[in-house]
Image 1: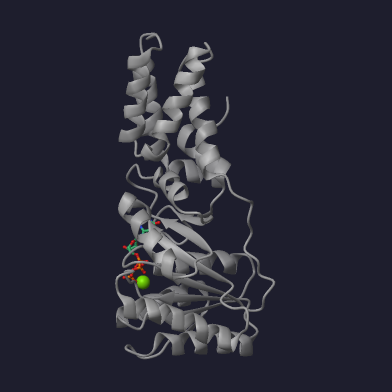
Image 2 (image 1 turned 45 degrees about the vertical axis):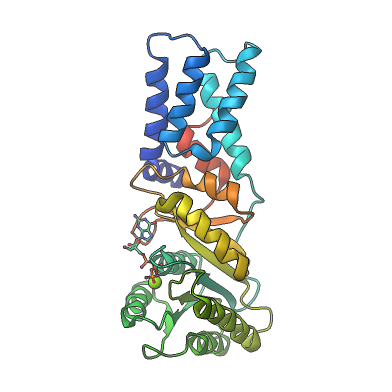
Length: 304
Ligand SMILES: Nc1nc2c(ncn2[C@@H]2O[C@H](COP(=O)(O)OP(=O)(O)OP(=O)(O)O)[C@@H](O)[C@H]2O)c(=O)[nH]1
Ligand SMILES: [Mg+2]
């Protein structure tokens, strides 16, 4: 299966909710009028596309007045262009020019940090990079164990300490080991935390400072992992999180399964941060760079 087909397949629930709903509304050659437009708006809301619903409906009404909306295909094309506008961002490739490139991964509890790190490790390995994982979640012993299993499976190195150790010390050791071993990429896991836990937020700051002390300029990226199934809640948490931690990009996990693909639109609307990767399942290979066009096409179908 090609990468785009896989993305389509993983996001099929979101797409089907939308496109099946749309064909349902147009069944029987129903004319386009105010009632139909408001049903389209409703459909967007029920398909978890509330973040683009108002804009799409306003644009449809405007085009309809000018006689430019003839049927479902025109509606879909309008949806596509507004969705694209919403998620547009500069093309991006991970910059591996720093050796090691240090990536710190943060987020609230259970958002998908450790899983995303394992997936990224597998991905970077496949790209020929040597990878070292820093088990900075020393809060739960199980977290480092989980990471160690992933590391073994991926052929990555891991630096861990006993549970309860200072996460900043683990981060320091990880970067130190990566420098000594000539490793390309260091991914540093952290324990889940809420923005209200002041001491834990300060701990993130300490982790950053200690990494920077060992390797000036590092961490080169700090990625905030959001749980795509958490909707408004995830957005609210992310706003508060990014107010106290310097984040360079987002990973939106768990876009598969339920019809939650639309979460990305709300996230892009609310946060002025690029989405770097999306997680579309529990398996190791189910992480993809976020590419606006492919993403929108997977949700609403491509140009015909
Ligand atoms: N369906 C699906 N599940 C995911 C995805 N990413 C992570 N998960 C699941 O989400 C749950 C939490 O993932 P973790 O990676 O442990 O989350 P975490 O942020 O490290 O959690 P804490 O360390 O406890 O804060 C696990 O059951 C994962 O399998 C994804 O893209 N899709
Ligand atoms: Mg974790």
